[in-house]
View: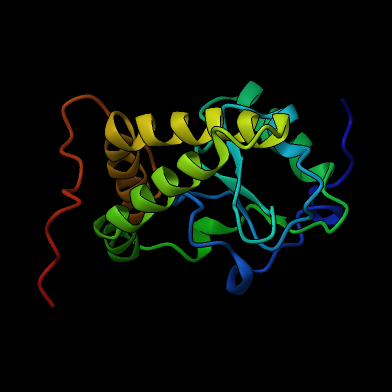
Length: 173
């Protein structure tokens, strides 16, 4: 699908990003509440429970996944996705986000508890996405964030044998 120039639809503002977005280049920042993103990129998008805005819970890792997230962004009538996270995230802010993951997990668990039996198919569909998000936090996200931290520090991917930064330790000032 030809989406046109990204600047036409990636107009989200960093100051408006939802705290539940996983650190990385893509994020949702007060997107629409039509719940279309998960239909396009179910392995990457969930909806928050305050206003139904879209949240990127898994950053794309290859061109096909990137196309899916871009298509979800293109489908947002508010044009409130962005792809400039690399300009804002630092290793320290990624560490701070990771250190606050208990808050995220509590939100996921509570939202799943409320929505799982709601009877609304869209909420039940999103609950499946939230459970996938939780599994990712429990198994896989830490490594992805360590790789992203390496990228932020060196602006290149790590090669085999290079140490990735620890997310639990703060650097000394």
